[in-house]
Image (cartoon, rainbow, N blue to C red; front, side):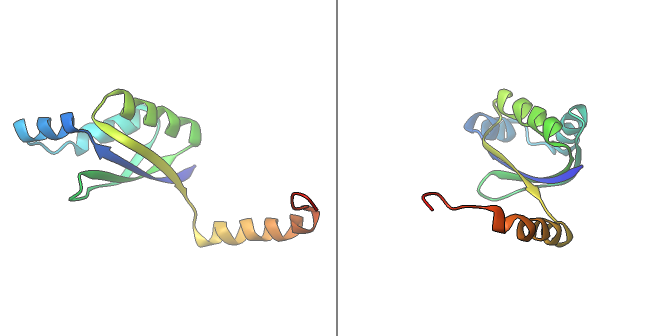
Length: 108
């Protein structure tokens, strides 16, 4: 399972809804993540009305969550980025070093 940083901008419609009925939607969003097989670890709202989340899961379940978020219309500009630990980065660089000599640049 991977860790993902999600980012999404609240739509104008969602902001109007929050103004009409201010509420903490953390539990609702946690349930949505869980229904897609993801585990919501952290959730923040930036003053720019952008949501930032940290969640755990796998890429297929993450794609399902992204589809639900966009289809609902409350958010736009949705992106998810897989997060790596430095241990995972070191492993990736070891693999890269092992295959670097086999790579040929375009045109060479």
